[in-house]
Image 1 (cartoon, rainbow, N blue to C red):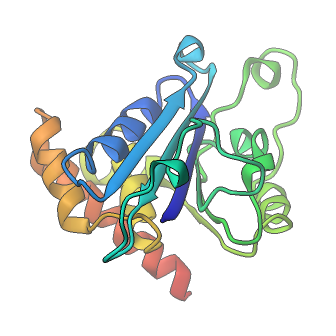
Image 2: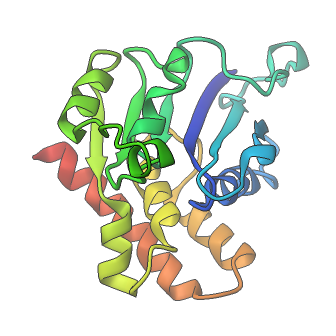
Length: 213
C-alpha cells in the first residue's frame, strides 16, 4: 500500500480549504484509495494562517486491502510530504518540518504582506531568499505566480487555487488523473466551470514549463 501526503499552507481567503476538499472529493468513489485530512478552519479569517493536509493510502494493483497499513492520522509525519503547496511565500516557511528531499514544493510567488510589514515597517523577505531557503530542504522547488495568472486570464485572483491544483497534478505524484480532477471540478463547482477547467490546464502547463526551463 502506497501513501501519498499533500500539505497546503496559506492564509485565509486564498481558498486552501476548497483545494483540500477537491483533493479529497476526487477519490471518494475510488475503492482502491483511502483518504483523510484536516484543516485549520479556526484560523480561516482573512490573512490568518491556514494549513490543510490530504493523506492518501493507495492499494497497488492486485494488492489486498490491509486496514493496518492504511492512513489513520490526519497529520503528516515529519519529512513525509510528497507535495507541499504554498499559496503565499512567507507561509511556505512555517511548516517545513514535513518537507524532505523527496518533496515537490510548489510555491505561489504572490506575496500577501502581513500587518507587521504594513503597519510596523518590518521588511518582507525577498522572494529569491525564500526560494533558496526552500531549496535547502528539497531540490524540487517550482515558483509560479498563480494570482497574476488568474488576474490576467479571468480579471481576478479567484482561480489561483485551481491553477495550483493543476500544477500539483503535473508533478505526477497525486494518485489521480487529470481527467478525474476535471470531472470533480465540474461536479462540485457550480460557477465559472469552464474558467476553472481552463485554470486547471494553465497550472498544469505552467508547472511543466517551469520544470523544463
